Length: 241
Ligand SMILES: O=C(O)[C@H](O)[C@@H](O)[C@H](O)[C@H](O)COP(=O)(O)O
Image 1 (cartoon, rainbow, N blue to C red):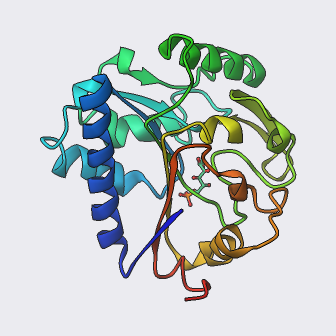
Image 2 (tube, rainbow, N blue to C red):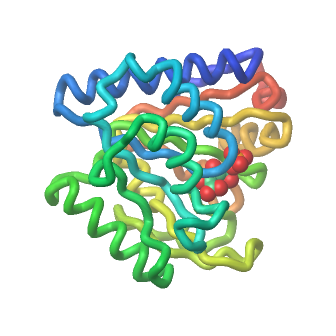
């Protein structure tokens, strides 16, 4: 596990953008494509815009396939649909073509949407191991990641798949990568900044005895891949030096 702590969010985002480009270049050199899973939420918006604007010429974006690690149970045009945020901040500015975008079809019921999304991903990987080149993750102040929320059934899903889950505290369904699917990735990177996340980060990174029911991000432990935390000093403030 790599722990990278930055004084400012700007420094963090620049380094993370360069990290993403480096992984993309390697994936394209090796397999002529870069399978890149975006995180939802607010944290990545600035990063996505930076990639689309400042790093437009730094990667052959036509070789990138974009996925989303979790989705809310709202229509695709809804303002809180993660896919819409991704379209606005990076996909449309980079003119990404439709068949390079794999998002959750939330016009279907959550369970069906999850099954369909898992099928699409499996078809994309032509039945081979579902091993993404990079999965970008955010983290909530309750230590959830993707839609792996504390105390939810999906935490116990041992399948390498996409699942639907009812999240009591939000009174809504979510569709999410399971922890085993995340852990199949070649590289996983958390993007976490701000003081509100400091308590969660401390538990996720420093707890000797893991308690993933309470701190689901502790489930992220790639089988063969790399795990890197990109934190600002506020999010890292409770960590022992
Ligand atoms: O659908 C989502 O909201 C995300 O995938 C979720 O896991 C997010 O990464 C965290 O909730 C952090 O969200 P912020 O970046 O908005 O703090």
